[in-house]
Length: 101
Image (cartoon, rainbow, N blue to C red; front, side, top):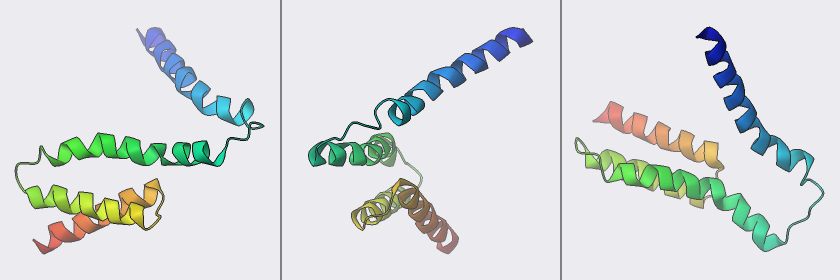
């Protein structure tokens, strides 16, 4: 059993490592047009939005919590924060809201 578990973990590590390694090793010489660079730069924000926005509508205890987190994330992204900055600012705003209410 332990051997199978090790092989599963090793396989998952290889499968997740390959897509991260390929752009750095194979595609680093390819220069994309500005339009496609802009599209790829916004993929993390679109993915984050697709994962988080449905959860906003499912909050039943305090809907203001979800709306406040969403608005703070949108404002942070609009002002140019990177993905980690957007997440950090939203968590910070919601922590302050939780402490105040």
